[in-house]
Image (cartoon, rainbow, N blue to C red; front, side, top):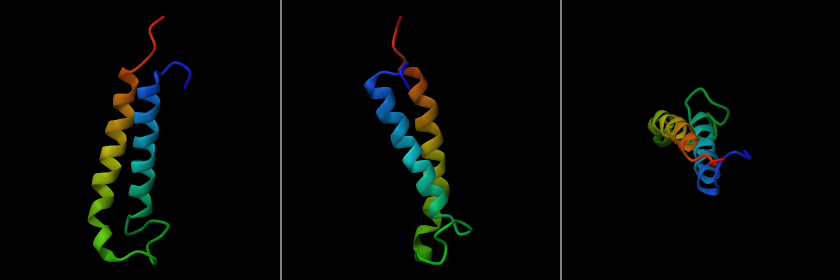
Length: 64
């Protein structure tokens, strides 16, 4: 994480949180019994947004 700028770090960790929350809200996920079925459609979009944010954070590297 030392090679990223501050904005790159924020984008990466935000993407990581979206990615993990997508797995938590999945119908086969960890919290499948505890959440209402309304949140199931948001799981795939949350996973995709998380991956996009984590990949886009690699464009914010410190210049040598």
